[in-house]
Length: 74
Image (cartoon, rainbow, N blue to C red; front, top):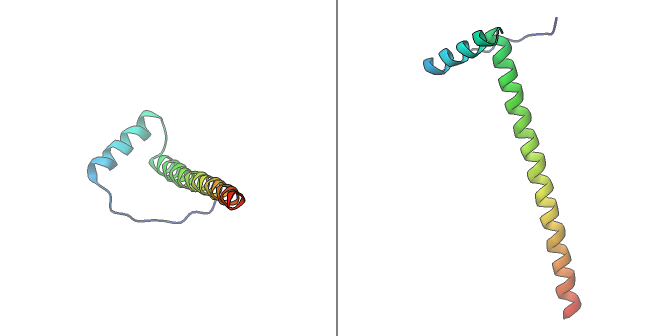
């Protein structure tokens, strides 16, 4: 069994009702659903940051190439 840590948070009552409903509709435990939602969210943020870093790296490369071309012209 994986190691667990308890986290107590304040949550909007309506959101909690919706989460419980989704868990019930999918025959899952609330804790499983919350873990999946949080894991997916964190992974999405990490992927977005990686994509943003990649885009910034590409922009830096384009900037460097333009700078080289400008120096060649002068």
